[in-house]
View 1 (cartoon, rainbow, N blue to C red):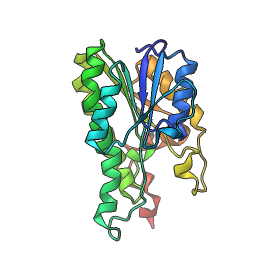
View 2: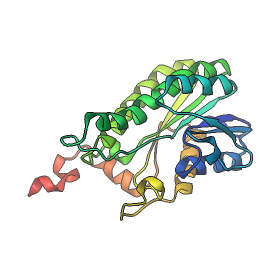
View 3: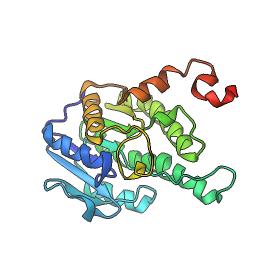
Length: 233
């Protein structure tokens, strides 16, 4: 279990959506300091948050952020992107972009902050996955989240002996800018943030933040037709 009260936390993508709610809820649970990163730190509006510029796909940017946040004990890899590229028709650069942001981005940040968290006596990392870690949506986004899920599972084993716990947060559609064009049920980002932080405090390996996510995971041992009913046609 990891105490949030008094902790120093870094949230990537902390200026909007789930990240913004995470920052608010962290202070509500008594966090001592919260670094909120964004490509443009002016988008970070919480009065107590410490804004940091960060582009998770840029090693120099990640290094600069780590140099400024040497007191971190909890890292939340929340920043993500969805290009909605097509495997067959989009330029390969667009296909790669989701992987760069959603898989390599968290890895770069984690590699930079693991020595810091370890030096500060251990702590916690939370990676934001998706229900699409387990359900292909026809785009590289789901592939990137599946890859991040695997990365998280490996890092959990590697970091446990070093005093760092790792939680994976899985969630379906959330009412954020990224999903504004989708006509589908969406979770409240505050509810997702509350579930995520409760998972950190409880030492949960995974947090399934909504009913859709729980249903998708429950179908993984079933035949593929359960997840992809169009195969029955």
